[in-house]
Image: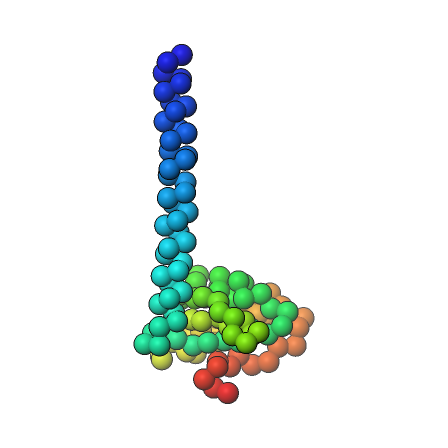
Length: 118
């Protein structure tokens, strides 16, 4: 009986301390990543997400390809920020084109252009 109580107490301590600590660590990593993307010295491209498209779908596809991404709201527009050395711009464009065509093939989408190309 004492052993069961001890195990329950240990599990409760782990849950009460470990879970909040893990969640805080995850949030801190996301914040650091987003701050890194907002740094003017970070090479990146910015893609303005068209209406009707979920930025999370684009970010997931880019993350699967090894890119660091984040989403930012600027003047009511949703931007996907993608850390990308200059030589990777076309790869980013291809991933976005591919995922939007696959997931939203029925929508009439314009060619993928980045903020600095307008």
